[in-house]
Length: 174
Image: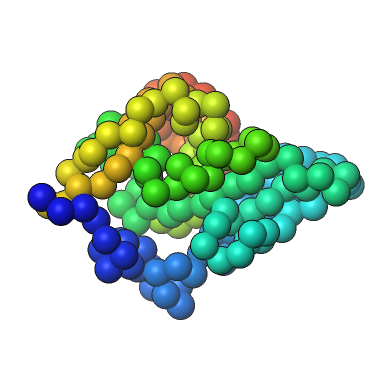
């Protein structure tokens, strides 16, 4: 069995509202709106692609110092309800490089319509080993993160989502 390659990744990232599979500008803008609410601090600055296009998506600076980095994904299969066949949150092994920096890191996963998201912090991601997982007939390296270590946010969370994600917050951020 072979590992997922760049061509496979491009296919997974296709959305009709994107210029290409790497165009996550709208996802980044949406999460920055949430950060502005969460930080409510005049000394916080939110920088898109602070280290270039192939690195983290957002840098959060407080008083001019980098405090948090964020990477944002969007899941096509997750719409108004959490998919029944998703039993955990997957952190991709190819993103482990984001965990090596000294500041905190947060992985964010939006649903398809960007009105809900999951957030997992570096300390919780690091609890899990990286394993091989079969994805559409190929292998990928992932950390399988429990729902207990993930936080769910959104205005219209379903009862099932609230049950699965004990750490949830009903909130408006768009």
